[in-house]
Picture 1 (cartoon, rainbow, N blue to C red):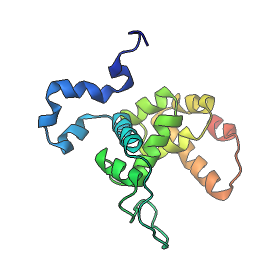
Picture 2: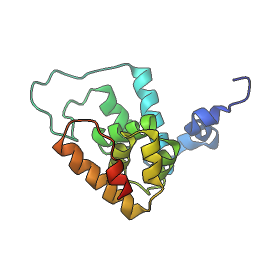
Picture 3: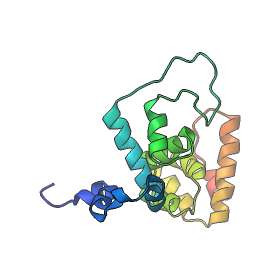
Picture 4: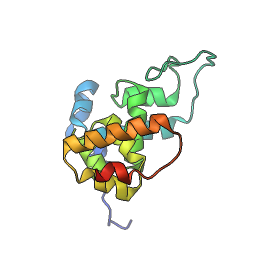
Length: 164
């Protein structure tokens, strides 16, 4: 980048190494990081450790609680301080597919991780339009999107939901 982009812009968590963060317990370190920074840590862990699919398990896994404990994404979720793999997967979807304002809203706890993951499925214009509304309206729109997506598997444009 020839100095145009600082390494801290690409990896904000890297600046903590110079502040003796390693002397602080891991649970306190993670508490100071935003959700998107924790996702970045998880993604970096996944990339550095390859894709491990875990032990064979022919049983149906319960949603939100992976019982296979050697999968890379499960380990990354725990290392990044997420309660379970599903929460990490949703936050990762927001960081990778959401617009910047959506990631900021998730980091500031203005939108929950699960609601932000639903909004991240939409186009950039639709995400932006939803985020212009107040918190109660955002929750109402997400609830309608959840209801609609559980009734149909088709892709659709939810403008009728957003504009109400």
